[in-house]
Image (cartoon, rainbow, N blue to C red):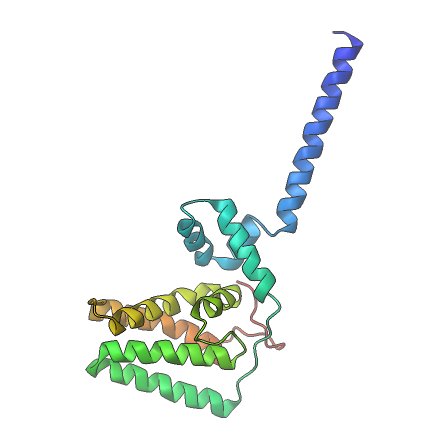
Length: 196
């Protein structure tokens, strides 16, 4: 092997190593891969599926959510607010026996209201509120998504979900409600929810 060929091989190997390091640093800086998957849990998988398996597009969306809502500080609820919301949730559950569709719609409104009071975007901007909630409550966001979808379907002319589906969605949404009202210890002393 000639000296020129050896030098060329060393330069090529060095360029490949530098390119690999740059790629790794960019990925780590953007929070891509395992960090996002760990933080967002099932929301990561749902976002990848929503992007037809395009992991890069899904991670780009999740990183954008982190940039927009990562520094959001939840406003703590006063004990009387917490009790009032808990009583309203109990009423929703009791109402479910007589009118499941109406109870699901009430749960949807209540979750939007509690989230807004805690400092998330207004429930009238559902997609933005959901994106912010997914950053801080990723493990429990699916219940709210399901309840919201069923509430919207119930408001339209098309038939919605069956009673058992609505019950299951309400149970899952209750997890987010507990998280937001502090019924389950998940908030740190600073008022910011710990990452999943």
